[in-house]
Image (cartoon, rainbow, N blue to C red; front, side):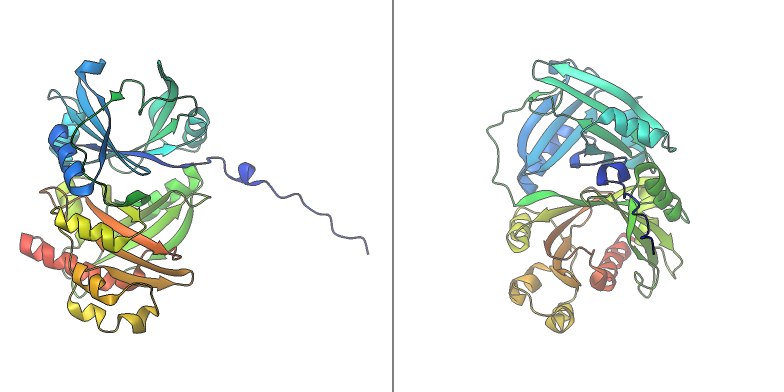
Length: 376
């Protein structure tokens, strides 16, 4: 018998029309960037990196860039009212505007996503200064959130052209925060699959895992979520939508106060969550808490772990296991007065999941906070 023909398989680069290297930066539009920068340095252990404003030729805004290991946060404030940044802050309060992605070719990233249906935000733009050049482009995603593709292989400056190095005598020790693990978006009723399709079609992402209202529900509220990931797994975007419940879900509360879909939380990795959370608590960061009974049968639920239970219980750190290993996680309370954006601190010990076993305890703790605000 004649052997079957061997069909050549596409290489990884041919399969992945949008190769992504990781998160480049997260940009927040905030009401007072100078004060916010001080807060992030003091409370989270970020360091000064770069600055843009009137002194660097930027006339309509100021931006402070903070760094901690592979994390870069940009805090931007308008200098006048009546512009896009001030309208964003008026509508949303402090919130994430840009989830920037590091790429090798920003022109190709723009062309590939736009031809598949993405709405352009920023045409490919070459930015130059004495340190070289950066190419950036961008597309719209849910709400007012955008993705900026950043190509910086020919640049040696502190951040981007238009920024200068920002030196400051006040640089508290870091807290062990390493990099962005994932960024979660909240969207409106029945919009989750629309944005899942968007990431699949325009960016080539795949659905890594799905959670329905049976997985994520309490006595009072529920939500649904699908996690979208790029080919190499370096970028992960869970998408949440509300689900029917007796009372208002955390997603509905977010949408009410943020005014549209947007980034709900940024999950930040650490290599030692006990150290990181201890430092953050000492610096004034408040976390959601779960009842002490959560820890009574913890080892029965998750098996053997390297950590002692006592400090986990004292700090309120949650643990969950999947087929690959286990993870430890904890969630801050909202970082501004509106109950919108918060952070997750996560340490992965092999696990690639998102803490499904903690959902009930976590969302009950969120509901307790909602009830105190009168929004449940």
